[in-house]
Length: 138
Image 1 (cartoon, rainbow, N blue to C red):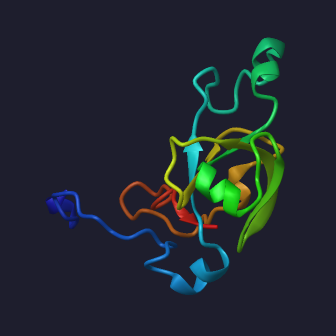
Image 2: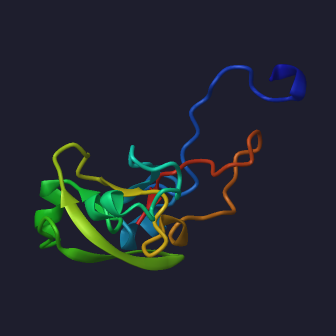
């Protein structure tokens, strides 16, 4: 990596949009979303047409901490609108204590509630060309 002009060791860089790097955006969109998580029964967006699998997860889920959900009057299974400066989707809430109160998680591969509607496709990693960080404020 060093020969190519990059730092040879991993270095932490704050995400392009976070409460630290963009406090102005975080005032209106205080939550950090993790996108790109995949459900184990699917390969990317493939196999969504298998009825048995579709019945288990017919729509995307927004995983949210119970503390955060309570502050927003969200209950498990509620259909919630979720937005960023780039767009809005609707999905079902999954209240879980497996996630930090400052963070929510959306799964990858759902056409109807596509998490890519919300993310910034201009903040790219200079080495891989992929999104710099999946976590952004919402």
